[in-house]
Structure formats: C-alpha cells, structure tokens
Image (tube, rainbow, N blue to C red):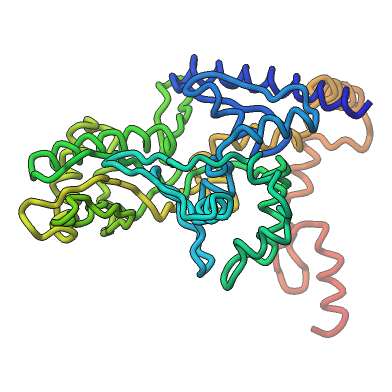
Length: 416
C-alpha cells in the first residue's frame, strides 16, 4: 500500500513539475531541467540525465531501482561527495567546474591503491581513473567505519563516514530548503581560454554588466498597479555592493611546458552606484557607465599591470541586498504608498456594511419622526425660541435663560 502511495506521489510530482517547466518557458522564456525522485540527491542526479531542457522521473521507486541507478555513476558525480570540496577547516567552498573534489579523490585512491590521475586542460578536466559507486560499495570491508577512517579527521564532520555510506546507497535525508523571496546576491561569470588584453577585458565587462542589469530587473523589480494608469515598476531590494572577481592562470613550468591549474580567485568590492537603479535610461547606457566608473577601476586595483594577466574567469556580482519597504519581516520599513492603496482591500473583512439594513433603519426613522409631529413632547420652533429667551434677576439684574433662574435664586438665598 505504501508503495502504491509513493507511486501516486511521484506521478503527481511529475505532472506538477511538467506544468511549472512549461509555464516557466512560455511566460518567462527560461529553459530548465527537472528531476523528480524521493530525495534531493536523487533528484539532482536524475535531472542531469536529459539536460538542458527536459524532465526525468526515477520510476518505479524501489530500492533495487535506486541502487542500480546510483551504482552506474562515477563517485565524483554524487552530490555531497564530488560536488563540494571541504577544507580541514570545515569551510565549504563553492564548486567551480572543473574542480577535483578531495573526498572523491581519496575514495578513488583507496580503490585503485594509488593516487587517481586527473587530466586537465585549459577549460575542462577528466578523471582518467574512473571509479564507479558500485566498485567502491562492493569492496571488501567497505562501510561507514572504513569511510570514517578514510575521510575523517580534524575539522571534518564527525559522522562523515555514515553520511558518505548513505549517499553511496542512494539515501539522503537532507531537507529541501524553501526558496528565498529575494536572492542574497546576483552573480554572473564566464570562462575563457585566454583573456589578457585591455580591449578584451572591456568588451567582456560590458557584456557581463548588461546581463547583470537585465537579471537585476527580472529578480528585483515588481509591477505596481496605479489604477487606470499604466503600471509602474518598483525595486524590491537595493544591492549596496558591486564585486569584481577574476581567476588568473598559474605560471607555466619552463621545463615541462605545463601550467599549474589555479582555482584561486581574487576579488575587489566597491559601493554600487545609484544610477544603476534608474529605470528611465537604456540598459546598454547604464552598463557602459558601470564599467567605466566602477568595474574598470576595480580591475586596475586587481591587476595593476597593463597586460599579460592570462585570465580564465571573470565574475561580476551585486551583493549586500537591502530589502526595500514592504510587508515581509526582513523589509527595511513599510511602503506607505502601497499601504494606502491597499487599505480598502485589507480592511474590508472588518468593515460592517449591510445596505438593506441601513435602508430599513433610515425609513424607520423617517416614519417615526412623521408619526410624532403632533406629540405633546415635540418642541415647536416657538417653544425653542421661548426657552432660549433671557430673563433678568429682580435682585441683581443679571440676564440668564429661564431654566437657570431657580439655581440663581438659591445663590442669593445662601447669602452670596
């Protein structure tokens, strides 16, 4: 029964993913790859099967099917083993393809009884000593204890052996985090075979800047309705920092002619200029100004030499997001204009308005007034005028309304 329920859930998930996939492409023009399975790790691996614009579901959801699927992968392809490199300090470093992960290399070396060879060129790398998950998993004495001895050490997670063994068997209990309403940063980069002239740098920075601004417009702008007028756009967040990162290649060995591969980036940051938030100017004009006034000065600080940098990567990013006024908890205040525009909708559920009851009440009051016009207690205009006539005190001559005279007389009787 549980198996049938899981099958139905996977089928429903596949239909929902297909719908979202199509809507994203039709409405936004974005292609996407979708993987559907029973865990985050399996979904990532399944999604890699039909890149760049397709969908795959691991079905049926049986243990044998999962194990067979995992076993055919090279150990470095498993998320959590080969997709990240963890330094002994415990700091997780983002994977920048290509990168030889430490954990995967240790496992390859254990199986091969020697260091695994990795062939690298200017842009890509390939593992020459290919080791599958099945080869490792079925080794003699392979298990959580042996993996802890191989991978454990100062600064590494205490349960790294158990986690790695679980991943090798297709088990991943890590939760899927909820997507943030706004990104922490927006970053764009490109890799190059060789980038070492000033003209090429300017050209690539302009291209990256245009793409960055367009991405900011997609991620950080929302349409704001103004009644009958054309909708305007407002910023949901303002990045405060512009960052430029580059990755120079290592020096060439004069004997072998090979070049040591470098994964080290150098970065510089500066305040993001306010003109980037101008929605009236052309994107190309804003991008050119951003390059001239911000990115090129940052580049000169990173690389004071006039040429010969031999860069393999350039990254441009906006960071330090400050959410503008809004309704979320992380907003830097309330949007007063939006609050007044939405006041009627917000307060409608607490507003009591029964038009039929109000009409009946109004008619009832009118009829009641008409029926009492001849009543003895109803004051005419003459009665009102009479009550408002002033009277003079015969002792002191003070003028006052008739209803106040009794109190005034008591004032005299008390000897005042």
